[in-house]
Length: 321
Ligand SMILES: NC(=O)c1ccc[n+]([C@@H]2O[C@H](COP(=O)([O-])OP(=O)(O)OC[C@H]3O[C@@H](n4cnc5c(N)ncnc54)[C@H](O)[C@@H]3O)[C@@H](O)[C@H]2O)c1
Image 1 (cartoon, protein in one colour):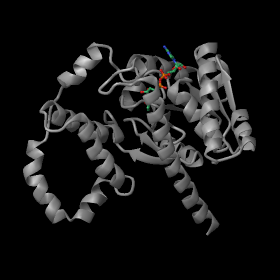
Image 2: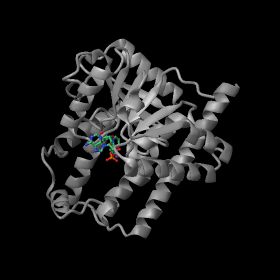
Image 3: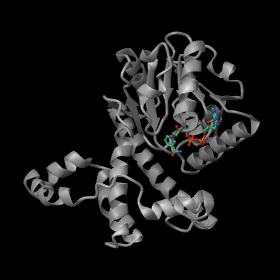
């Protein structure tokens, strides 16, 4: 049975759109997803199906629940049908400011006045996306992480004109979706998560370009140290637990030595120029033959599912207590 407080629509049925829809439906929320054409929608439907099969294989739920989730998602290539009577639209179209601005302008014109318009942008400005709306107080960013059905975090970004009511409704919906929303109080590029991720990525590239360690060893440094700890304690708690006396001393000599490069590093620039984008082209920083890609996707999914199971059992303990 649906527990919708909002009537949810998702515009864009790509990598993010269909997995956000799955997340909502998994939480018992009916959702309508718009895709550009039949092919786009077929891809989305089969994406949902294969993700659900994995979740059934890992015994997160059974085939009955799988069918319920599928029934809660309606796919359409009519944007009008998708947003009809919608009270909450999440936009997940390509990461292009003009495209998003046009979309928000159009939605602002056709949706009911109190319909929330949320963007899943990875890091564009919430205020800029809403620039051509007459009603920017009902606009917000809700940034889900990939894969949206397995990553709990959603960053809720307040644009310059976003109202408190809009923020409250976004949090309420995301709580219902069993997500872990955080509030980004000011509209900054890259929000919180991507700023942190790119700070690490900049330093990782600096270490590589200066031949301080191999790419594999830099990746291992994260996997076997920070990656493990960060699953339990974020940067502030980690520093507290290590002792601020020691960590301020490290700060005093290390900060000025860290990379502050403002533009793209040569290695990445060359890879992109050569069309080596990662698994999608078979090569990137690493080589990505199909078999290796499947293995890494499987490994990552398995680990994320292990975390989800732990989260679910914690929630059951809280509610059961
Ligand atoms: N892929 C990621 O890792 C990721 C993670 C978090 C957030 N995001 C953000 O989510 C949004 C969607 O990204 P994605 O990876 O799902 O993209 P995608 O290319 O997989 O899907 C985009 C979808 O938008 C629609 N679309 C395509 N062209 C369009 C057009 N010209 N006008 C309107 N709609 C169009 C289609 O339904 C298409 O499937 C972007 O803003 C992206 O930055 C992506």
